[in-house]
Length: 304
Image 1 (spheres, rainbow, N blue to C red):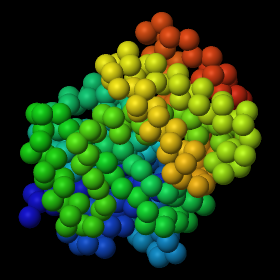
Image 2 (cartoon, one colour):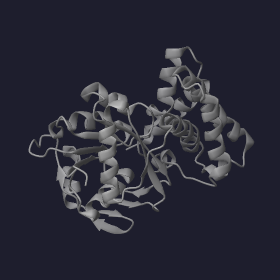
Image 3 (cartoon, rainbow, N blue to C red):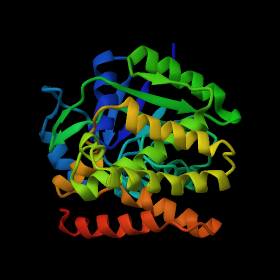
Image 4 (spheres, rainbow, N blue to C red):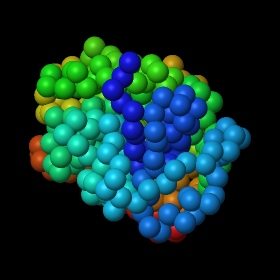
């Protein structure tokens, strides 16, 4: 039996809901959802519908100091990460496990700058997109949380695996976590961003050779950065990412396209923004990501 009996989730979008509903249905742990004051009254009275089933979650604010979490799941968008990092401080003990389900490769580093790496489990989501319309969220059950760790917190990884087994949250612990981590980043930098600026799904993009070449160019810039970061098999990781998008998966409507359509802020800063930043650090030109960054920022001007 896992020692995790109190959970705090920050972020109640698609990924937050997957975890929250599984935990609530399993009755294996006490659960609270952390929100800011602007969302508190809305979330307190409004039900969340996940796959057409209504859920009422217990909501809390950052100033609550009476609830100490064994596990904190950060599942915000990138623009909510700074709030999450500061907002969880009253809920943390020296043994609290923290995982971030944000896309990209930078959120764990940002969390560690505040709390250290000791209790952070590396993670990312793979699976079909969640379809969100305000507090109505749909997800078809095809997903997996990929988990990894540094040597210092393998015991925490075992505890988290036990808890996910108890609650039914789907996960995998790949032996080559860093490879999978960067593959997911390449895929997101490619299809998420290209879909956002074109308004097209993956299936539609694959019909246009010029767009396929742009997709490859976006990911190739990540390949060069990955090599500078110490991944000497970066070319193989790129090939795996390309194969996944062009051969293994038939279609997808990425989350960034959904954000643009719903006039929400996107995660371009953790995709192209990160590529541009690391490109400058290593002296690597990133023209495709520079261009698409500006295009998405222009589209975001209409965001609510």
